[in-house]
Amino acid sequence: MRPGLKETGLGFAGLTALAQGGNSEPRVMAAKPKLYYFNGRGRMESIRWLLAAAGVEFEEEFIETREHYEKLQKDGCLLFGQVPLVEIDGMMLTQTRAILSYLAAKYNLYGKDLKERVRIDMYTDGTLDLMLMIAHAAFQPPKEKEENYAEILKKAKTRYFPIFEKILKDHGEDFLVGNKFSWADIQLLEAILMVEELDAPVLSDFPLLKAFKTRISNIPTIKKFLQHGSQRKPPPDSHYVEVIRTVLQF
Image 1 (cartoon, rainbow, N blue to C red):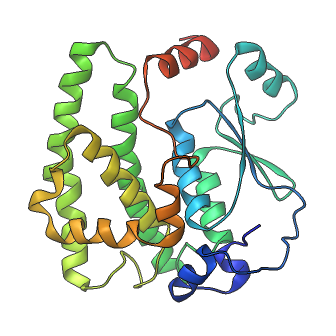
Image 2: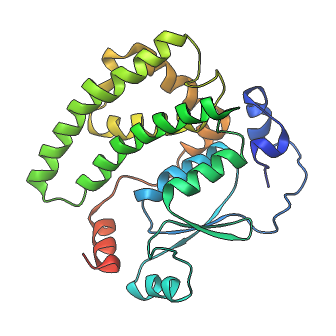
């Protein structure tokens, strides 16, 4: 199993060698991280992205019935009665933000100091806001969904993408924070690709973001995750929406 970036001591310069499958020492953990969620994106997708970008293999257990969900609750696995749930390092972790912060720190994707971390937090909170708007729209009636998608595109073009274009322009570096690959870069690429599913040429007015997308997409671990057959999930369809409505009873 490939180790995480922190455990190898590799920064960006070592990403290519790491992703191309060089021999590595076995991890201390006997088991891979295990993710418990629905078979779709939702709040788990950013966790999948972060693990994949760090070169960490993981297992998934999909929740498909109300009984399965209730069993996790009964077993005391869901701290606040909610998923995502990630089993890692002998812990059962819930709450998306806490999980992402832990993984980013564990795999050296969370900056070198508090000042870098707070910038990463600001940027990831912003992209998460954008992605959740898209995710929530999938559960709305068709007319409202299309209206919301149009509003989301407007916000992406006038609020979110101009901010990140300016960040890249102001510091002139390859990455968002500290000129080192981080959680912020991973989640911005995830958000860009989600918005492009709504409007393919959305980056036409953002040349630096367009170059950023190409650059980050070609990091080997991410390039692998973007290939067909990976654990990346497709946009939500009617079956996914129905499963969630049934399991969560809303």
